[in-house]
Image (cartoon, rainbow, N blue to C red):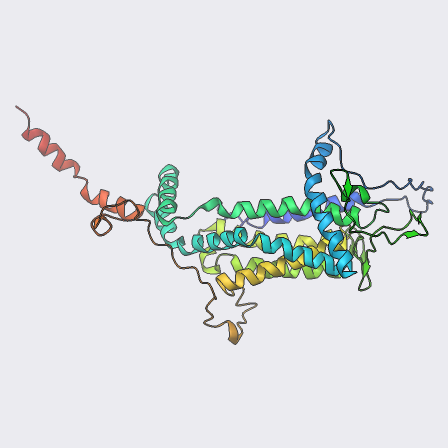
Length: 385
């Protein structure tokens, strides 16, 4: 008897989690048991300078990101100069960035919601053209066009978020640990007077201390925050755990409802599992990423949660472990997304009522007008001479 094949939906995320854990373990310093570590030579500190283009891809990428790094660092330095608190400066800079990107992320959220609303029509297309991928793809694209939905609309905000995350990491890691970042404040040969280094005493620069004070609220935001050292992963960071939990909430709000991942719809099931596993991997980053980057991540996630709440409400967040609070029952979002109506622009008056409006209706109409094979043969016999 042939045994049924096990469900492999979890295999990919579990393997990815194992690879990340091994990579983190490989990055950790290892010493032989019982052996004393060799003395290390501390390199001479160097000022923070703009990257120069090089032959290797890393240098070229750093040079391309230098303008973004410089703009972010100038904004952070100015806010730190005004507030006198680097944590508040990071929060304000994050809110400023997300406020400028509200239209893009709104488009992403609306696109995701509309894709969920037309799932019944997409499933009907898959049922009607089962086994013919070309016709399924053609009918789906026709449906997207009729409903005015761009499936790729949600990709740009994600790409932009990653583009900002890389220079933000460098700004916090290097900008908050370097003793002389004045070169990054120089534009067209003029230095912006928005930063007074705290490590300058009587005109003498202490290279052992950073220019910007990275400590605020008892945390050094330029270094990883490790509360509990752990083997393999290096340590557990409370701020990384908070960031991970907030990302889980954000993902659950916009993920497909659980009833759409039942049956044979394995793609939706894998999507739900991935959207929950990826935020949890963030916990492992707390051992080597600076705490300031997690603060940026937390503020960004909270901003996204509020924006999603206004558009999709609580979404698929509840029920949570079988519990649905009273305030989430029958909740209507402030700016709800309706099912997109068919696009009838360019059609003559009354055409929408006389002709099918969707690809599914057109396919059914075409099938109803096809003559049977027997009738066609009789017609050909009648025309013979």
